[in-house]
Image (cartoon, rainbow, N blue to C red; front, side):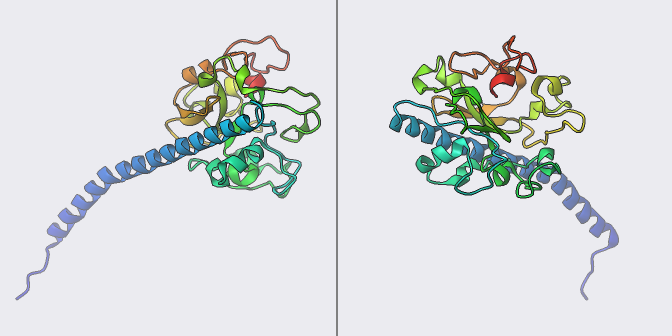
Length: 258
């Protein structure tokens, strides 16, 4: 005669499975998160090296700045630093961070229909990485920042960088310390996690974000202190350094260049 499991035995087995699941699931989640961060840094290094190749072919000149082109939809008229770097990168997917989860801004009704509702910054703008405006060359009546065509020119060369290995050239759009739950002053300091309608923030990673530097390297930045110490223009001004420029809405170089 075959012996069946008793109810107690079944409950014990179920309890063991539940305990194992509770132990292993967080481990799997952490492993997936670590893999995403590693892939993001790998993308950043490829972008950095492609940018160095661009400067080598253009007499040390940095690519032409444009970011978040909300005037021209994806296609031949779209503008962005990635457009100039792409011929050297060969693969536009390296501009897509595996951590890119979009953000509240992409759902605003004021955005053009072709842009509104995109799930990621890569899908919306062709890149998950934000470009540090002061590091790149600006061309009058060509360079775009959001829906604004810039009315000045400013050529920039790689050789003019005071401290290229610490100069932030690009970064993933969302840093975890932009959250007010991590940093109480995050809204005033970085302008992301602010009360509606000024909210731009969505957590992409709980640990950090990728920063690409002007020597072509890329590494993770995990806290506000390190982020604020990074340089943001050729002269070597620090991101968190005070500025008296009337356009510095946070009173720091971050708000002038990032």
